[in-house]
Length: 257
Image (cartoon, rainbow, N blue to C red; front, side, top):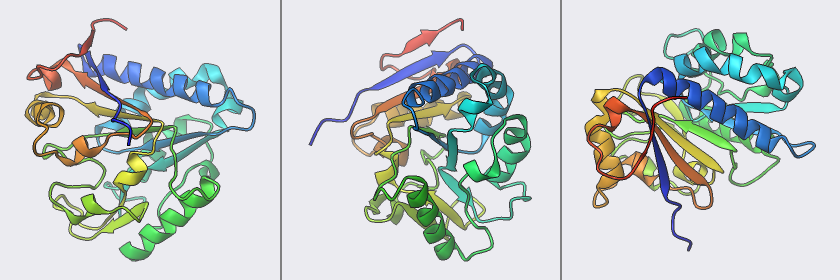
């Protein structure tokens, strides 16, 4: 088994600079994927502060590529809360309002859960939709996954010491006992996260500093985010100075765009 790829940590002077660089990275990854005729750019999004970051920066960054390029994007979600899309906790609902309304991306390009189903069926339904989008691959291989990190070290809806961390068969799993409300969610599993071509974690603010030090420097008791180690893909971390302030591992500092 190959050793996991080393992670590259980029530290920015502000969340604004981070967001602008993140948007440029998304556009660059898309352009690289779409250089092959007939290819699609498969992007997996997480919620939280990433919604506002991407809503602010991605439309302008993606505009030069034009509608024909964006028509070849497919968007999915790394996890989702089992709430109606109109609910304030719906990740897709937030992206639909704040980002997708600014881009020439159609509903048919976005893979969502069915929030009207029971959580177990919602997970199975989302897995089926992913397999259709990825042409039947047993494990979907996203071109880019953008992940967040919780103050407890969780990512997606994979929480510390939760049995889902051991899931190896399902590509999408239901969770009914999330320690963070709402309790019912649908999440990608570690095999999918680790199959991606590129994974980028994004974290900002002093409140993330202590947990990032544990994730990136403590190898004894890995937290969920530390278990994301793409088998053949790239792993990157985008942090602002406040989030990175306790790190002693090497990182690249970006003072200007």
